[in-house]
Length: 166
Image 1 (cartoon, one colour):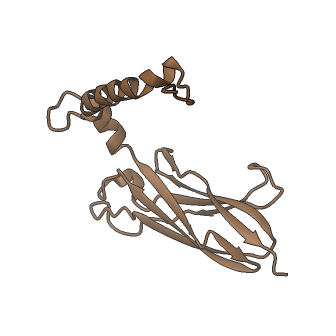
Image 2 (tube, rainbow, N blue to C red):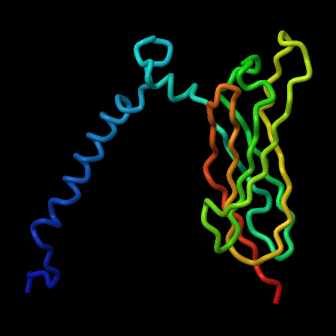
C-alpha cells in the first residue's frame, strides 16, 4: 500500500537539474556576449554599426477609420549636423496603397536647394509629411534621404491600417 500511483519518467526527474545547469551556464556566458568593448578601441566594427546613419519612421496614427489623416515623422541619426553631403538633402516619401506593388507606389520627392553660403552647413534630422488616406486597407510608407554624392539612407516600412466605417 506504500506504492505511489503517480509515475514520473526518469528523464523528467533529471529535468530540474538540467535546467539549473543550463541557467547557471547562461548567467556566466551572458556578460561575455553583451560586452561591447566601448572605450577600449578594440571593437571598431561594433562602433561602425552604432554610428552608421539610420532613418527611423513613425506613422501617427498607425490605425484609423476612413478617411484618416496620417502624420509621418522621420528621424535621422548617425549623420553630423555639419556634413555638407547631407545639407538640405533630397527627401523621398514612398507610399504603397492597398493592392499596389513597390514599383507602382506613390512617390513624393522634395529636393531643397542650399541658399546659404557653403560655410553655413545645416543638416536637418527631422522630416514630416501628412497624407490623407481614404481607401480601406493596408498602406506601407517609407522615407529615403539622399546625399549630394548619391548616398541613400532608407527607413524600414511603416504599416498603416485604414478601416472601413460601417
